[in-house]
Length: 365
Image (tube, rainbow, N blue to C red; front, top):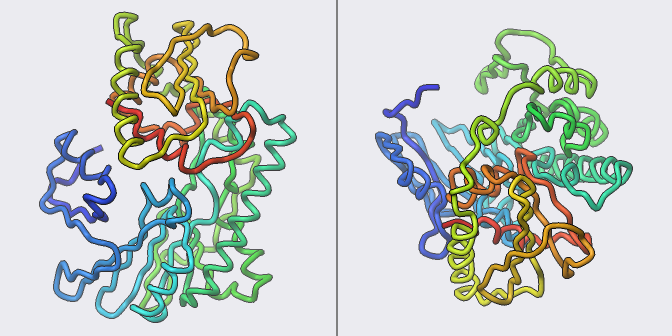
């Protein structure tokens, strides 16, 4: 794929209070664009005549979302578009949009979840994974409807996290907490009497806000779970990037991890965050297991065999050595590896701590 270097990039900026991961990524990898607009939250900026850009933060009650997510607001020639992407809307953001911009013309809203839970969590049985998948999907659809009602947007469109897991882990699609297509929003919206506001588009189809017309004019194509699995299985032979190469055993995972742990510890000290929890990293192809006590800065290598000796509470993550190395050097982010279902987890007890999960993103050199 070619990158348009003449493009202008819009990113939210909260530095120095919150690290700007996107800005650092662009700098570290030498991406040069015509202009990068750094927009402070709830601070409208007219970047071109008639084009106002604004941002809202992720929900502060959700550490992970607050750290990495953002919602984009565009006001262009009188039309207001709110793109929440996968940044879950919450009351304060909705109130700001309604107060500042009135009734949005189009809101692009999340309707599903995109993490590795429950598909990649070993402490769950297959039946529990299926149950958790359905619970999360139903909750996300309820939030979609509630947000559509609260925003009073003229039109709402299901958006973000619509993908198929290919490659060697294609089988995890059946436990992914997102439906096979955005059409899953139709029945909940109909039940709420909001079906006339729902916008569903096929690939390649466009919608004109001024004329309320689609092009080409064609009915929406609903996809089934069986069709998704059939497509995923057709992609099973495609290798992931970390499967295309294998780093030599001379690559010092221990030293990389020790350096990354030190960086994470420094962030913990700044934030005063020292949870009574253990992080285990299993690397089966190297026959390695590392233990990190979140209350001390050191990393210990422990015996890989047997799980009875693992201290609780803990989160155990299993990854091949090449992938772990890529994450430690930040070539692949922990967040993206999770969303791609590259990692296997075991969580004891099975209690989700969003702040702890967010902190994994600091485990890099």
